[in-house]
Length: 366
Image (cartoon, rainbow, N blue to C red):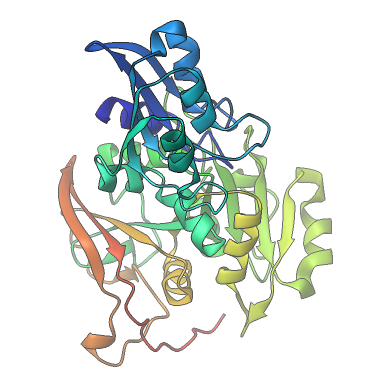
């Protein structure tokens, strides 16, 4: 199962709109087939593993990271394929919540006389496809809020300089995350302050869609994120009132413009994420800045938080999060599954947003 999870993980971010699935087929103690979901979502991991195993799949055990699909799409159901191949046993990491699959893949296997073992390394398997599961259950991709800050909670010096707070190792990890996500999202302030490219700069990596939230169209068409050559598009998100002006402003750069309802001058991020869900996206990396971080947390679109804390003290500077005002400590957003590890010279603090009631907040001025 660990091998199956590793195979699935190697395709993270490449299989949208489908989940990433790894499959390992073992016969008489030897691996006879390996497979992961191909780029674009098909063929599925089970189909690739069965193709490699051939006739050796008969009587074998298949280890699959996610419940085999049970519906006809552009490919036949993987549960049927495993049964027809004569697999004797299927070991599954976690169930698939998609109503077209949930429990049905298991039922197909059992009806065919295949022994099924469930929930092997379930937590790891669930975490791997957490974005896909979030989209199925909530209609939006998983939001991952990434911040890099000093020991005293600053993301930039008083003059706006932020390069570089985090270590080279931390920045390399973020590039890997970009490759694993469907999109990276920043606010207009970050674009104006840092002029980022928002591309993935690791060997073999692929660029995510680059999303700039710019309600008031402050970012000029000449910034790097719009000029940068990339296989992934850039998208500007603005209000309905600014739609026509935005389309005209960014037309020469080929930038897509999305209009989303605004609330007090701020983009309704929950509605934006629903739009991303309709596109089949599973994971969005929210990279800041402070206003976007606060808005994302306040709107409930953040599922996981990843904060790099550098061993530096800045003093006066820009706070990591703005626009949230918890009246009491008990109103603060709580994190579960909290962990800490060293990345280069930084501490990476990670956690999952607890499903408790969100804090009462005041919306910041635009």
